[in-house]
Image (cartoon, rainbow, N blue to C red; front, side, top):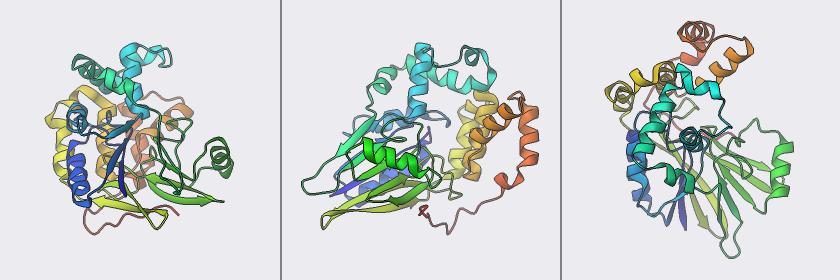
Length: 293
């Protein structure tokens, strides 16, 4: 049995198309879309339209839920965000998806998906961890957290996404795997990345797939669709993340918060000057995806 698990598409229709073509060649029995289909990138509506109706399984990501909460004015979102230009891209996307009738779909996504085959290790899939979509599985995840997850949930293999970095980590008798990201990888590999799980000889075998695609078109789409103009600074940062295959939004968010700086263009310029290593050039060719072991 083969199962493809893809996540963190983030509105990148170009990388998604390449991954779906690769999945078709793998002859999989099941496809699980493990959250964060939308936001950050310029083609979220196209991503939803492409995925829906394919008999795929969907789990909820934090960005999917953010858009849903934005439309519903959920009290979990700080009131100040609604008038903050920094969130203009999310606000515009929420309006677009609500008008197109997609919010009910996002609301229908489950938090977890379980795979149980007779005699096989039990697999539990969630965007972050099974208990929260923002609790990512990563090399830096403390063993205390892994122990809690292994104790709280009846599973042998935990599969998450969210961190945008592939991972295959063993803790005691449990295995923790991260799919990596289709749309915005953070491991300096610019290719679209997803996970292929194959059940063979009573065990699950993980293969991290790395698929080249037309990144120039994906980067140009930020301007071509008008998203760069509508989304202002945050859209610009998301485009830089795609260009450099490296996290920028969250580090900038934490840096401004820690230093009590406004999240504006002046702060972004200062942040860039202080973190030149984050903006180093990458090569699109000859890149091999590696999991964190």
